[in-house]
Image (cartoon, rainbow, N blue to C red; front, side):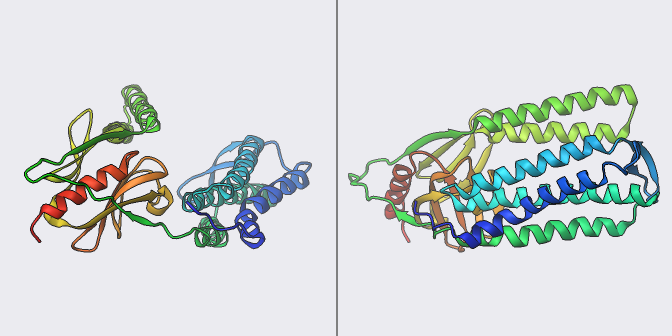
Length: 317
């Protein structure tokens, strides 16, 4: 896959938010260190008044580490061949670092001025910082990505009356790890609920358990192409994830699929269609008669698309 050249302007725009946040936070910490009290407001109630106090420095070091990680993430994203996924990583980095840095600087400012109330206007400032950081850093990286080609599948010589079918498996170890981690967190939350008798924790635990199970369902799937069309089914539960009958398909092919095109990994739904994305790489690309698309990343995408094309050729228009 061809990647556009990284220009100096694009590099500066992408790096600016996280780098400026890192520098501003470091300077703010150094300048205010002699003046900050040992205890500052760290939590505010619904009315904006401080109801929790603690040392300002644990939050400072966490924010500084996140800013440094955001800067490093941006550097690695600019070196990625997959510019669309790189833009997604730059977006995350540009939101986390600058917003956390701003939050600590605001906390320090409130402590130095003796204010005991957190104004809602500060929340708007955090939002504005995040939006500005994303607007500066992401568009140049996204625009540098080359067009994603959709390749035609090679034709298959199929004897008259022969049955055409293709099957493959695809999944993600990260999905398994994430699903198990979320389920464990849900169980811990549920146990904590029994101790505290907190109704809100009951809901949180249930939501986490359902979310973890949903991730495990998507962790490994079976992709099948036969006379019924394209089907994606959970390997462990046999729950159907995607079904595309032949009569709904206008054309098919394969191409290099990027998580950045679809806003991330997993089961993705957007205005362009539905995709199951586990990584950057080859995937079956199906265009439906209504104009939307169905995409599945799978190692043997070329052969799967060829089988689907052969079945389409035999299907009456």
